[in-house]
Image (cartoon, rainbow, N blue to C red; front, side, top):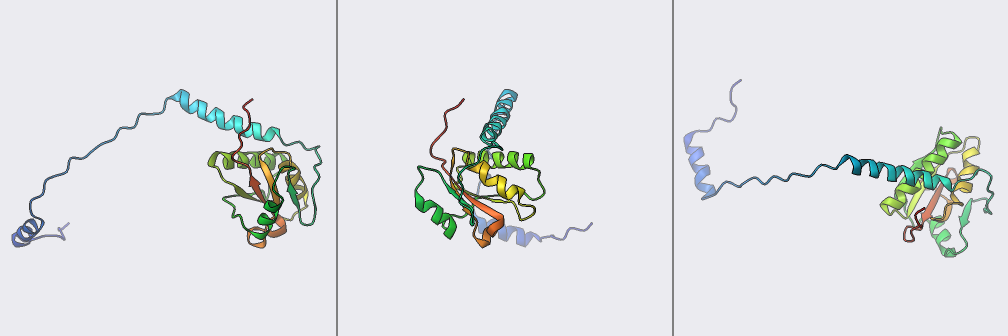
Length: 180
């Protein structure tokens, strides 16, 4: 294979003269310490514990006081204007969860994982899309969300985020729950 970049000696000398006196840089290498297996296991267990702990809040029998058409909820100590801000699209979701095709148990686990991820990443707003379907997840999702202590409020999503087939949720990420 012929060399495409053959330079004559005049071009090489011109290049060397144009760059002047230079010195070769010493390459720095950074060696990261590997994470110990015990630390990896602890991090994995912590994430699993957070997911299970978040799922613990969801009861299928609890019937919270929800306002219907459009679906909305605000906990007792929440600012009443936060629901209006959600409705008007003041908050843009940082996380999206699509529940299409999931069973109730799978959806419950995914919602728990979403809440854990939002709290870990300090995301204030998320969107859950449950679709139209048979309205099973549409009725259960708000009931599960209303039980979680980090959920400040939720409202049916504006059209750009799914309309009446989705919810926007606002989380209280500043107040930590006591570890159990």
